[in-house]
Image (cartoon, rainbow, N blue to C red):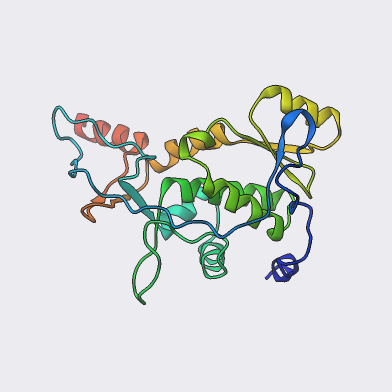
Length: 225
């Protein structure tokens, strides 16, 4: 367990700034963390089976799809121990289905897995868990469609939200951005990865098998032989 994670959340930290305070060129520093609202559970639409004619297949980022723990780990590049620890300590719990009651398998949304992947990159860059918690709360409060246009910049202590290339340049020139995470690029990478892995329908509970192009090529070669 990281010593940063043990630090009390009530004291001041680099990210706990007044809402009106802004960084260079209008960039926003994340506000004080607030308890994230529970995301709505989805499942209003009819099930769509793979291969059904005249029906478009559901993409990996659809709210109709959820991902179990092992799939979320594989897509985010983390261990199951990390996933379990972050869920138990409240850093990031699955929004589709939690592990309660006992014996229930966690089910993560596309947004959950995207944030997990971003958390992994922030940790690798040396950002503390205390500051990551604030960033996670902010990312969960945004509309999913807004995330693709974000770039997260950090100097290892403060995380900045940039919505334009000029804001990124201004932060770099001011020495406040040591590294950046283009959320849109992470999104695209994640869609490709999850498209090859198993998913579960949130409306019917059915399992959808991923489509790995390599596996399909192998099947075609076997049929040719």
